[in-house]
Every structure is written in C-alpha cells, then in structure tokens.
Image 1 (cartoon, rainbow, N blue to C red):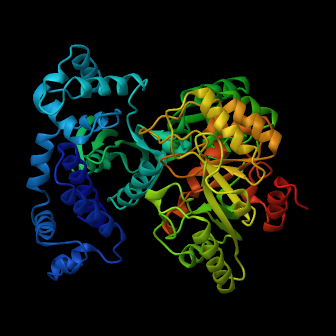
Image 2 (cartoon, one colour):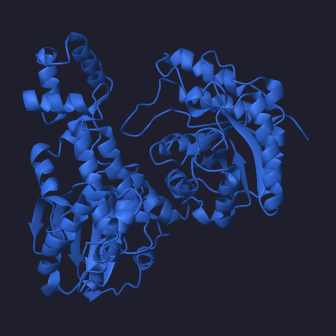
Length: 576
C-alpha cells in the first residue's frame, strides 16, 4: 500500500458511488482524498504509523478508518461490497446522452441492463417507460441519445490513461527481478482514446509467473481477463484494461516495435525486411543464419534501410514507404513550444491568479503566454465585460514588471454568438493583443447555420484564433454539426489560426483535421486552455496530435520566437 494505490482505490469508490447515484458530497470527498494522496510529499504510511491521518486536509474519521483497514488487512470490505453491487460495464452507460448515474442504476436494478446493446433492446421494447421516475419522455430522450452516437467508446482518454500508465510504470519497476518497464501499444502511439495500456517488462523467465501473480493480486485490479506464464491482462477498478508481457532482454527492441504496432506498420516492416534479405519476427531480426544484435529500436529501422519512424507516425504502412524514401515529415517536439496562447485565471473560471500562471509558465521555460479569460456572455464562468477586462489589462501590466523575461499578452476568449457576431464590441477587442473566438452555446444548430456562424466570426478583423473548432468532448459530447472543410478554407483566406486544444478531453482539432489544415496552408497553434497551472502540462497531448498530423515548426505558431509571433498577430489585423 502506498499513496498511489490508495488513491486509485478511492477513485474507484467514487466512480462506483456515482454510478449508484449516491450522495454527491460523499463522492466528492473520495475524489478530493484521492487527489490529496497523489500530491502528498510524504508516504501516507508515515501518517498512519504516527496516528496523524486526520490531520491531513479532507481525511476525516471515516476515510482514516478505511486507510487503516487497507494497511492492516490489505483489503477493504466497503470496496468489495460496492464491486458486488455495481457491474464494471455500467460505467459505459454513463456515456450515453440522456443517462445520468441514478437512471443507470435504476435501469440496472429493475431490468438488469449492463451494456449499451441491452439498453437498445430495452428501449426498442419500451421497457424503460414503466420504471419509477422515468416515463415516455425520458425513454424517448434516451432513445435519441442512443441514435446520436454510433458507438459508446470504451476506454479512457489519452490524458487519463497516460497518467495511470506512467504511475503504474513506477510501481512495476519496483517489483523484484523486474529490470525494465516500457509502455507500448496505443499509449505509445498517443491515440486519443485508449482501450488498453500495454507494458513490456524484462525479467528472468523463472521469475515471470511470480511477477504476474503479484500484479494480478493487487487490490486496484478488479478482474483478471487472461493469464499465461508470460502475460496477464486485467481490468483496473478505475476503468482501464492493462496487459503486462514479460520478454527476454535480447528480444526487447523487436518486441517493443511489434507491440507498439499497429499491425499494418509491423507488416510493412516485415515486408521491408524480406526485400532486404532479412527475416523479422517479434523475437528477432535475422540476417541469414545470424541473429542481429540491436542496441536500440532505431537500430532496427537502420538495418531495414529506413529512417526511424516515431511511434506517433506509425499507422497503416505508408509511413514505411516514406521512411524508405527519406520523406517523413520533420515533426515538432514538446521542447520547441515557446508559449501558450489560451489560459484562464481567477478573473473568470480559472483557479489561479495571473501572477501564479505567469510564474508557472516561466518555470516551464516559456517566452510568452496570453491571458484569455471568458467574455461576458458566459456568466457561469464569470465572463468579463468591457469594464472588468480593462481592469484585467491593468493587472497584466503590473505582473509584467515582475516577470520581465516573459511576454504576457492581453487577450480574451470571446464567445461566438448564434449569428456569428462576437460577445464584445470591436472597439474593446481592438485594444487587446490577442482574440481567441469560440463557440460555447447553441450546439444543436444545423450544419449550414453553424458553419455560417463560425465563418462570420472568422471574418471579424480582430479575431486571431478559432478555439476548439469542432466543440467535441471525447467520449462525452459529439462535435457539433459544422463543415470544417469550409471553415478551413475561410481561415486560409483570412489568414486566421486554428487551435489544437491540448486539453485531453478535447484534443480539438483532432489529428485528421490538423493534417487537413496543414494541407490547405492554415497555420495552427497548440494551446492548453489551462484553468490552473498544473494543466500547463497538458501541452504534451496537443503536441502528440501535431506529431501524428505531421506538423513541423513552420506550421505551429507557438514554436516561433515572440518577435515573429507578434508580427503574425499584427499582420492578421492588417497592422505593420
């Protein structure tokens, strides 16, 4: 038991309570305790051994008792009880529009529905309308929700899965006899939705069974899906499938390539090996009767006569042809990002001050940031009107004096209204360094109306950037109906910039649309949309989208020096 494993257990309890429709304050207390445990500088065992658990903020008597039970027994009766009450697959039903936790639980308790397919059958047979608290209208709303989605995506967002996998790597490498742990599969390729976290471990063969058994018995493992002497697949209680594969160290570089995938890329490598007189399998690269000793994965590609293909570019095989001809794109890296142009502070719905966000940006080595709080129409986010915006500009001027090495641009995330006009008048926007425009309402407009709405906004001379252009939330909300081809053409005409929103629940533009933007000559910016300083780290997810889309520094404006950036922003407004 350590901080991380107890944190995962508390998160699972919160999820199960949410599905049950339990007390929201109780659910929140478990989530807050989980966050606390993740950020503690000291091992929670110290607080337990010294009877200090209740001195930690948010840890009351009930939670302290559960932590005590975990340390004393290695298990928790309450968690086991909840697992008996709530089938693991119910989590996916929460992603159906129109279904909340209480409704999901009611449908399960009365109709024993545990999957989307079973739900569709129940709706078709009109069984929901007779349930307490539902009725015909609720049933029809759920039916419409099912019709709006082609499938309910299984798995977790890249951000959630990457965080869990990174933490799990640190735990796995501490297991006895494990010498190396690497993440492969979908996470290494940085796909936006992760169904499985795949790990390669190197360890002595005679220790493999014990290592896998130790992992499979961990309390945060809810179910063992598959097991053999060198491999185990499990379902974590926090919603992610995990597969561990133990490989021989001498096979590591061919195995990591094979298990990174996808299968189309691997088959193209096998074909390339054959054409060059080599034999490639997941276990070895062979030249005639000689096994080739590889010192790195790059070595493998070099022996095959190929440029190294980064995991983000591995797809269906065309990239292998490009690697053969030396035409792979020179993509950006996280280290080349020089700033973040979409940040929120406590002036609207952010959690930290301008000073705090500026300090965090400087600590990341940034040259510049833009403060872009919400505009007045978004009242739930305490959006800024002209008067408050002017006051914020004054505060930014003051903070600039504290950080002379950081350029802090004044800005706004201005709402695009239903007719395409903007939430603040032009004379207000003209005073700002940067204007980010975004849709935050009216998501149900038809495609023609929504497309016209965004095109009108792009024609405003003071708009620089279109934020999260499709409006999607991964696994939660579909993109609104909009013709993004038309939007990209208009952005190119007007010289406007399209955003790759790096928030892991958005990743918007996605990889395909970012590549299309590149192909039509539209410049892009990668922004975090951060509402606190910790979210600045989300930049890596946006960079992954850009790398998968083949974007270089010439395509992404926040890889440019501040002097060049300012000239671009001025040129969009026709200024010299």
